[in-house]
Image 1 (cartoon, helix red, strand yellow):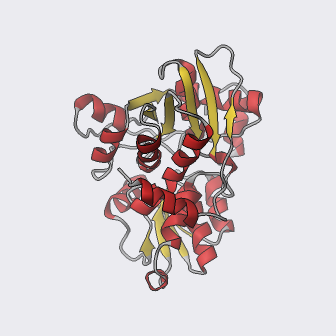
Image 2 (tube, one colour):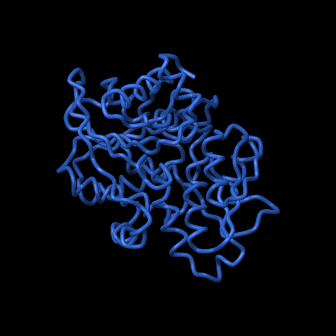
Length: 315
């Protein structure tokens, strides 16, 4: 659990970089729940990742940034770290998996980041190891970094101020840093609120691990939901997530594509695959009724995939 004092501190540290995003009521009369959207897709980089990345870089002493910063990311954390590195005036190197979407790679380039593309297995090993041989700099872990999680937790502070005691908050789950950050804040400020992680059913290690009572590795299938899902839960994250999350829900790719369409049709909101996972789970009824907040974690989706989804198909 991240101390609430560190989350409150992060709120001040990231001021001027991350936006306080709106909480929007979604008009879905056919749903069992009263659904709200936390629109992190409206951040300057199109994703919540600017919160944790900025908090980590701004709280790092200048001498530790001398060789620049490094991260491993499929795209959104890369943009957050590149944004913060540019602000700090230091170079940024990003280790990306070979399936990273072109939209996110182009954004890294615009922000001045250097991309090192590797296989998914080598990328995952770099994530586990906290870096890769030959790539120098202050490593900002996209998940397992307390400063990153504290930055993510500022979303929970805003939720507690904007909506009194929601019944549930649904959070897309990739590595768990967003879940731990938000859940830590809500445990302190809204303890009755249930927190659920949401994974694509093509890569849902947390659901399998919670069912088994211990970490489990699952088959990983890459999909358009590139910002969520993994082969296994990171060892250091497992005890944190198990303590804070009520459970893990899964959504199919078809359900997620349907949620992306609905967000555009009803709210004119553009979400990427991971950004629509929470809504997909909420619409399915698997999170129950009452007031449900869905974290729309990002909106960085390739136009070609969005075109396919809007045509009624699933990429």
